[in-house]
Length: 249
Length: 245
Figure 1 (cartoon, each protein chain N blue to C red):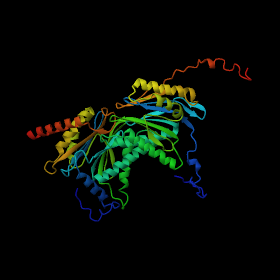
Figure 2 (figure 1 turned 30 degrees about the horizontal axis):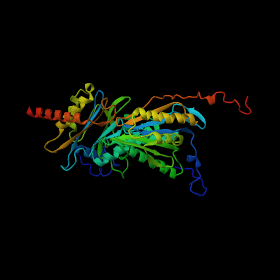
Figure 3 (figure 1 turned 180 degrees about the horizontal axis):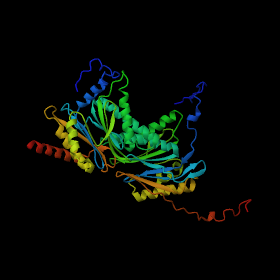
């Protein structure tokens, strides 16, 4: 895993002898250093949650949004370098807007994911551009139902039933695999995502974190929006209780 | 923009000679919009006609549309320019919503945005050929404003565009007062629309009345006004006329 690519890792336009592009792998490491971001596809929609590690107690809670709406029906949760993420979100918004003005309908989530992925990939093709140091989980609802995609710094994009990136991604993926997503509504999904994020949060290494969640589902009328405050509180309480029960064992 | 600039010198104020890129005259037009403030908000009325010159070509044109949560826009003039304005506003409201921060653009802000758009287009000699009426309620404040195609904007307790300025506003000046009830407001608007129906040749007897309050927008189903033509002077109109048979 940590192989030194001496000499072959100076530029994103250089392959190593064993066929790897090290700069892209290093970009992925930047994503692995950030707080966990989770997305799941439930029966009736998508739920996304972010573990926002708080850098300073002086920061206003609720600021520094990590989940952004890209259009009425879709949103993006960003992990990694925040400034890079802002750029990707801006590009996605512009693509969605452009599609609507040309074709007269909301951009299908698949199309949006492809466009974002090729934009991210673009920045891995030229020596004078560095790759994006952020991974993105993109969730939305179109006429084919709810869909979840993940875009990595290499420009790869796959469709998922559940995805996680960031620090606790391995642990989070294990937890997500335990869930029966096809039978879960988004309301239940919100509680589960909160539980997972609280669980994978490393109390020792990182002190405080803020939980940010969003959904696109029937309850939100297929619009991407922040999870309503009362449900978010309910989820946090349930997550803390679950954590205490686990510690008590 | 203009990739086909001719080689002619750019004399005068009109810029390069690509006149096909500027709006010179309107094609499909809507006639007056009348609006007034009442107790709970704004009432606005417009008929559903789209005239192609002197022909009443389209009879189901919706000339009033809700904008965001707090505003209602009515337009007279070129219908295609109105649709373009709706596109701009749609994008504006979308970006506003995507902040997801509990704030939203109110009627005053939308009115200001429209004024900027109209004035800047006019300065390029390429106007959006509309007279716009923008009304709304936000946080208890009622707002009613107008923007013309040359960018003249103002707010008032009652506004009208086109022929409405000449026929409806005098009625409103006489009979409008603060805190009209909904029924009184509708009656007053219908009175204005009836006068316009009798006297404006591009008016059509199919209108909608829209209401915007703190709760939201309601646009009525299209309906017609009752008119009275049984005046004695209209019976046997050609009697005594020279040269008639």
